[in-house]
Image (cartoon, rainbow, N blue to C red; front, top):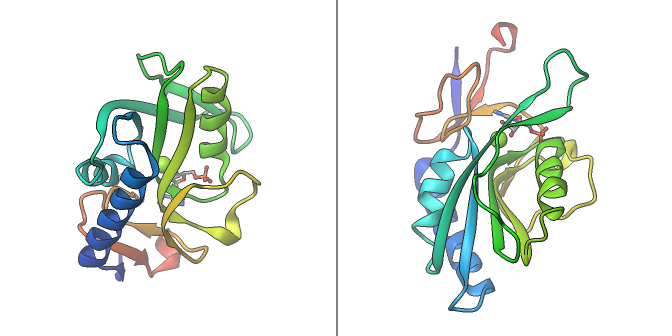
Length: 174
Ligand code: IMP
Ligand code: MG
């Protein structure tokens, strides 16, 4: 497959630092932030972002999948967090928000558990594909409605380990 560099490693690093400062400054200094990394795509972003957040943190992992045989967009929790978020300040870290189905499903689920606050940081946001009203609190990059890989994002589980983000060029092979 032909990959075209879309967002360089250096630019990602700078953006992650910026987001870390914004997130740190948003909360009172003595806040303990419960950070939820949505597997698998957010792993690299979360690993870098949490090191830029100067607060006490807990780290939890969540895994979702599309329910087999159902209409596209119906989601189930594969691996829930094993931790109560009641009365916690929660930050959900997403790699990318596309249609918004995934993040809206997560937030609706988690709101039922009565967190003190719940916010979302997404490295990437496809504004033109987004179908919901809920605001994404922190966005790294607004991108066009195109398929990208790298820095955690995959195509058929490939390319997650790339340091930069790439556009897949040869559409026929997709
Ligand atoms: P949603 O449409 O916002 O629910 O996004 C669903 C999931 O699709 C995301 O969490 C990603 O895992 C994946 N996804 C969406 N757009 C891309 C892309 O451009 N590259 C790789 N994965 C993507
Ligand atoms: Mg994801």
